[in-house]
Figure 1 (cartoon, rainbow, N blue to C red):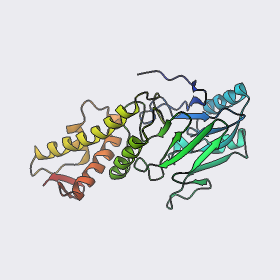
Figure 2 (tube, rainbow, N blue to C red):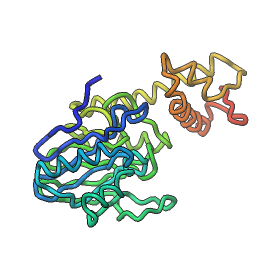
Figure 3 (cartoon, helix red, strand yellow):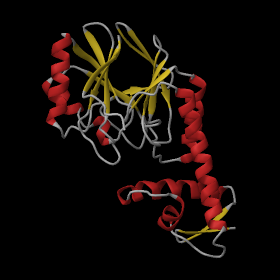
Figure 4 (tube, rainbow, N blue to C red):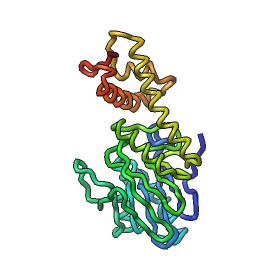
Length: 273
């Protein structure tokens, strides 16, 4: 595992600030990014709001570079990405704009981002791409000056991502593949220097996982299994703390496979056709 510094200058336009909230799902912590070259910058994501150390870190970076926040952009609604908004507005800049992609069932007080929109500050133009799957409101942002993609939780710097809807997620991976970025700054984990290889791995990994699930069910004909049974049969050497996330992934695969007529369900127990 590459140890991620708490603060690092990734490019002339991008400063990384670690959210200081490590955990099984956040890895070494949520990555937040200060973007731009002028006095007013964009902050992408805000940590979970529960770690004063992160707010102090953000303040120190702003002071060191003698800059302020013009705009906060949020990759998606999950608490470890949006939780710091209120504290940042209260303690750093109460007039800072905050924007995210809006989904009807999750109304917010934030301004609305739209697919294809561009958000700019001096030295940085960011294009918004709606990439649902990890969550319905998820977006990635392309820094046009560097052809660098901020991938949020759609693609991680280590391991693979969880998702709410596998069909949408696979479409979003193909969207990112077509953008063809030269590097990726993920929501968790270190930067990705070879994006195409990583995106293709993600697509291949999901297709292979689907084959494993089908093979495992087929090897136990007429046996009904829970998603956890399948996790234990398919995921090798998985830490028990990650069972819940793996179960959700398996359930999404199973629902997709059921629509395709390849498996059947009975009260949340699953079997091969």
